[in-house]
Image (cartoon, rainbow, N blue to C red; front, side, top):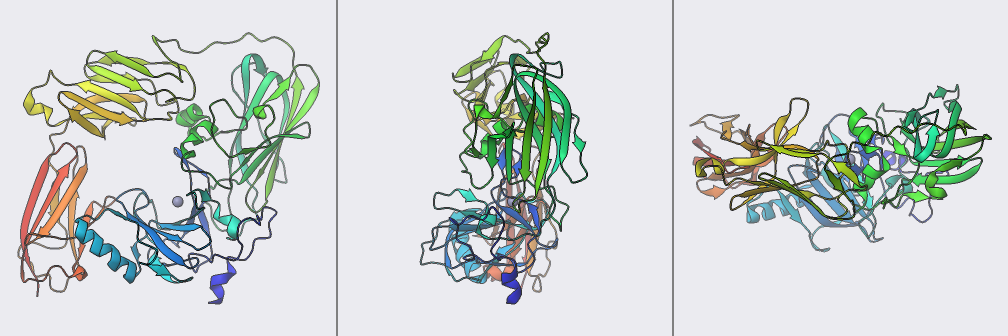
Length: 561
Ligand SMILES: [Zn+2]
């Protein structure tokens, strides 16, 4: 047992927060904590809401309840968290364990009963406090790689009683980290018409000079007017090469703090506004996440502190000044960035590069764009900023800008399909063209009369497409007439090359059987230990339906004794 407590020692770092209980929670695993992902690190369209703990590239590690409590929620989904367990503790916090391979036998039994009742593998349950009580250090589950996980690990969260994820490090999770954050890129942004940086009114990439001690300098920056900065930064820990997020960034102008961003806690309601923190169009074009060290209007993020003039600096003379950013990881390893600025009062010819189109979106008003058989509807505040949107329709192809503008709210795209004949109508769907080869990807499509609609958060190109491909169903580990008495699992491969699998249903002798669907290897798996297949001769029937309703039925017979 000794090893269990070694890694959750009280953290003596300067960031220790007495408002969070220390030594109350134990580690969810009994191995050294090495992180593949840190709290609030920048992911696509969200901040990471927990820690990704490495599990030695394996599945099946024991997962422990971090304190006493009760199972308050169980969710099993094909995507997202996969198999996830939520334990609510008497002190008001909830711990979350995700991408699990399976649960403890007691919890597994509880879930299976409900899955058979509901005839569904995907399920969400909210057990009463009495149903599944947990003692500290109970084995509650086994680590896995389920849902949208790209390798075995445990996704672990601690949430407060308002469901806000909190940095678990604040409760004393300890990780070996003596490595300073790295700065990969620094950009300067002249704000407004007369401002300029290095003789230009456009965003400028600055030449960073790494110092021997891991700090960075920028020299001889010339600037005038209102200027903001952005950095691309990553943090590594000692025992892993993963590029993780940092914990705190503070900036100072001539010695006075004028901005701070602090990754202690956020709410799920604000997580999408990550796209306002980063330079979104830069990210979409260059795959670099520049964190803006200034706050623009319409930025609802709660992560900021100590802000003066929204983090911008103002230069209106030729005097030299110093801008400094301190970037820290949770353990207090700090990287300094010093930018020496020389005031430059020379006027610079402004270069205007905003593309003017027929359609201007006023961000705080709703808008409708329509042409031919296509209509697009935006709610007010779908976007952070007002802009000229690129919109055109030709031959059932909608060109709706480029995906370089962050979108806050889903909007609706509608295609009138009255001109199609009834036979084709059934298989029509709205596809978004994705990737370098413009692959038509199914966009969740609803049909009402002769109108197809989809709700999306992606700007880009949409087309009407037809799915004529039927789903496929193939047994993996047996043939028709096989004896499967010694088999633990029944495995079937299902696939749909068109719009994708929407639904599957398997029965044996007319009785529904639970099959777990793993979209990564396209496999349905039944566990004979469920005990529902009791007869010798078994007629198996599997029906798979795709997203437009094309359906394939597979029937076979196997034997068991
Ligand atoms: Zn995670």
